[in-house]
Length: 381
Image 1 (cartoon, rainbow, N blue to C red):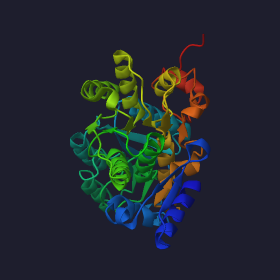
Image 2 (cartoon, rainbow, N blue to C red):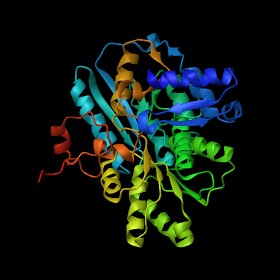
Image 3 (cartoon, rainbow, N blue to C red):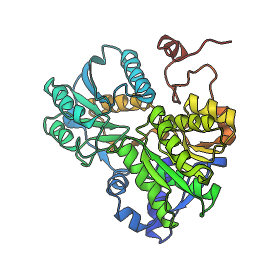
Image 4 (spheres, one colour):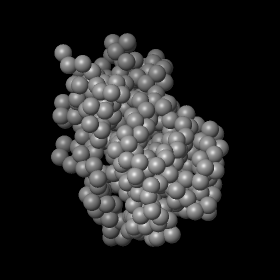
């Protein structure tokens, strides 16, 4: 409810002619300005804000269990998505065959071109519901609309599309997250800082909308970035790009905005190889490898959370829909996972888990026994 209250205060602030928005709490509190012009220029905000107060009447989808549920996922293209899938299979098993009789899965390999026909194949199997992690906001809009026309309710999980013809979306306000990261960087370094930006996978709303929010804040200060590149949420790509940036800009770099902790791991490695000090970085997460390196090097950072465990919330939403219960049209995972809040380097030790492997993104809802079975726990020394 806290994040929903923030959005409501945001809307009220626009109506009253003010524009100060606060995200986070304690040491991670960040305030940034947002204008009606920013909202007018953002189809994402124009979609999300009305849905905060909307419910979907799901009575047309009501049926008795067990259910056949389809998941069109990002696939095991990186550690985040691998643990997302692991959470999905674990939770379906936890729900039991009397609730989910069949779990249909599609691995998009992080490609919209692969995912579009994959969704069509899943729909041809006539599932009771579809959970979609869209790999392209534009490309997946038509398949989402076809699913709804077919009578298959769609739950968007962790990313969005360019149509409002779906039942609900599970995620968080990505525009506000991107803007918060940019504002923290400016507050920490100063308006005259020289900044770099590394985004995720172009075309996915998770990456594009965060970028949109960040650029709106940078633009409001008249800040021109040294460079902006897509790191595809890959440590290897992040390192490769950072090596080029260090060769081009060196000590000129005052701060870095990143759309994901996997890429930051690559950046840290590049700085280690160059034997250079790491500047403030906005864009860490509760990702164990990132936290281990951040604690070791002691640089300033601002972290957000995008837990792959949100798939359990998406599955709960599907069950609620198929039981015919009204459901909010936007579900912020923070309302269910209040620990999934922003934090800074001052709290790094609190979020680091010595027994987790570097690949683990928290918070995690699976028991340790399952993490161990999947190879995500390390042996205690």
